[in-house]
Image (cartoon, rainbow over all chains, first blue to last red; front, side):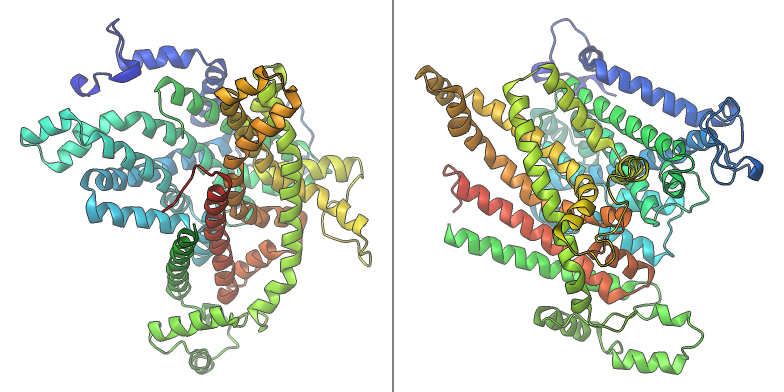
Length: 297
Length: 316
């Protein structure tokens, strides 16, 4: 990135000559819970990436002779009603849940950044149009609309469709934030300078202003990942999520519902993993907000 | 103030009208259209579907249909369920008391818990109790609601047999005590998120007010601490909370879909889920419209009380 564009202004400016990112990291490190959060996320993400290497069984291998087995050395978290190894299923579930959370955030952020920045930079009727669209989106409780849309397509959403849907419902907050940033940034000298040098709008919007608006976008993106993971799990539970044969954390929990008396571990374990992952994301996002000095609303 | 209220009401009405247009479009853009449910039924012949289409007026241009639908919506004729054939409004009226009972209990529970928690956290800032509470609220937000419900069922119903697992009444028992026993867990699941957020807002609101000059003056006058906290601090930190409460109305309604489904609570949320599974479009649209109306009017209510409570706020 162009270092001149990133030249810090305001409270982050330091005489020491340190860059913005190393300063931010120094602030971030002060938050112990956020460092724990990073560790948890590294563990979960590592597990998801290395799933085939660290799981003793295939997440779909049936073993009806050992169904609903309690935790043991062979099966760390026991087995489910079909004898599938719960530990392997939780680890593989992390793959799906994290993938959906991250990509849904990317889709939502892309829409939010593009619409928010164009609205904030262009102003006028473009701005009005985008903001009214945001108002309209926010007039529907997302879960009702999501359920209806998923129901159109057969009651279950394949992975790609789930990502698209969650992304489509996850851009409004970011669009508002980005628009507000652009409203103030577009009047700054460096934008005027770029315009005077003959830069065209797309270049100004994405090359000159965007790097300066990154801080609130990153913070919002962190919370968007958490929201998408929780939303996907809730849809799984309601029976409108990913197909039941895909091991996701939400599906594992839903399938465990019938066996809370026989094998409670099945219901406890995936819930703890979801909660810890989302808490970790919250702490990281919170520390990021402090480190990057994003104004809290 | 009067003209401000009128202006906001008109805006809310316009938004709701737009919402109804989108809802109507969704219903009619659904693959196969509103009669899709019959297309897969081998007992319904194509001729019969054509007849139905004509009877339901689905062969008219969309704007004629939309205005007819809207007129019905305003006049209390919300159409008949495609699945049961009964009027949608009648089905909703049956289920409404259960959902209102649930939402109201969650609301009251959240108020009863979040106020003491918020005040304690603010008056004992950075104490271990405050730290535990702020940590706890992160956990509450991170917890999937249905998992929390499952854990409650596992502990209090299955293991300790203290509370019924699900439902609203034992068969044949309509006493208030029985209802209350069935309400505890659903209300806790639905309200716990609001407990966390309201207590956080109250805490930060009180901390802000505690730093004001007039609070220092009140203490300097020698007023008892209790009196200052009640009269000067709490009252002034309530304004943001009232706003959050208004916004949470629709959050509670959305949450009711999940909570009712965990606990088999016979309310609107489960009716809506059943409408989805049965492709019962008129009922689905009613759910969507009710939830949107609750959200829009919740926002309006929040804004208006905000203006009424804080004399510094003057809308033109």
